[in-house]
Image 1: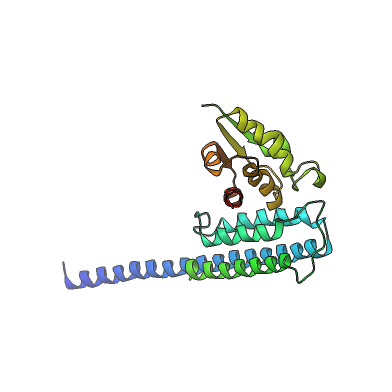
Image 2: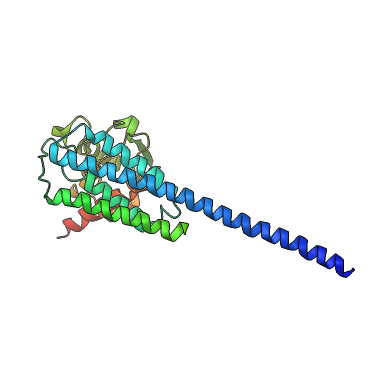
Length: 146
Length: 108
C-alpha cells in the first residue's frame, strides 16, 4: 500500500472512532436527561403522597385513603424503571417500604382512627420516610445517571 | 402435595381495606379468617395472588398476614407453605416483613 493509502485509512478510522465517541456521549446525555426526568417525577409523587397522608392523619380526610394507596402503586411503577430497584434488601425498595408503612400503616382505614396532632410521632414518621425517600432518589441519580 | 391459589381481587375484593370488621366489609381479619387460614388448613401450599387490587394499605396486609403468626402459624411454616404473587415487589417485601415482625413479637 502507498503511504497516501495509509493516510486515507487513518482518516477513515478517525471518523469512525469519532462517530462512536460522539454517539456514546450523546446516548449518555440522553440517559441522564431521562433519568433526571424519572427521578423528578418520582420526587413529585412522593411529596404529594406525604402531603395527602398528613392531611389524612391530622384532618381525618378519609377520602384521601384510596388516592394515597393508588399513588403509592404508581410510585412503584415509576421506581421499577430505575436500575436495580427490585433487588432484595436494596435501599430504594427499603425506602419505599418505609414510606408505605408510614403512610398506610397503624390505624389507616380503621374505624377507630383518631385525628393525630401535627407534632405526633405518626406524622413525624411520614416526614421522616419522605425525606429518606427523596434523599435516596437523589443518590440513585448520582450513582446510575452521572 | 396439594396446592391452591387465592386471587384476592376476585375471591375477596378488588379494594380490601382496614383491619377488622368494624373498619369495613373487606378488612384484613376477614381475609385471613375466611380465606387464608382455611386454605392453609386444607392445602399443603397456598399462593396468594395480589394483582388486580386497587392498592392495599399496610394496615390490611399486617392484619391479614402478620395476624397468621398471632393465630399460631410460625414464620418457618409460612415460608415453606405460603407464597405471595404480585407485580409489585414491595407487597411481597412488606408481607414477609410483617410476618417476621409478628414472629419476633411472639417470641418476646
